[in-house]
Structures are given as C-alpha cells and as structure tokens.
Length: 86
Image 1: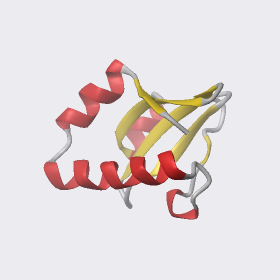
Image 2: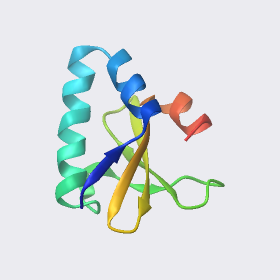
Image 3: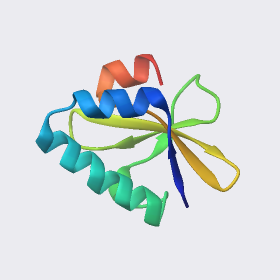
C-alpha cells in the first residue's frame, strides 16, 4: 500500500538521530509491504478514531491513517510524545 507523508511526520523524522531514522526506514518498508506485518505490532490508537500506531523500536512509534488505498503517515518519535498527539 503506498505511503504518503504529512509535513509533521517529515519534520519529526528529520529531528530523529540517524540510527533511529534507520529503524523508521525499516518499519516504513514493512508497512509499505504489508500494513499487518506482525513486527510492527500495529494497533488502533485509543480514542483517536481511525488512527493507528506502529512500533519502530522499544521507545519509538509512528502513527498513520488509512485514506482509501494510501496510508498517511502522521507522526513519528518517542512513544509517549507520539501518542499524546497522534
């Protein structure tokens, strides 16, 4: 499923350390290939409607929303920060 990136996602991604960006790239590749990939541990964000979170690593998450045949990447960063503003 094709990915589209919000401006907020791009800015947050650019602020991440290089090693974390590498992990985000890997998670994005998995998401693009199969948004149900078990390694992502994707689940709906509680109280946020149709927004989902996917795991990047132990401390980092990214959020996305399905819009037709496209996944809109909304936010990426530290777990609590991302889920406070998905």
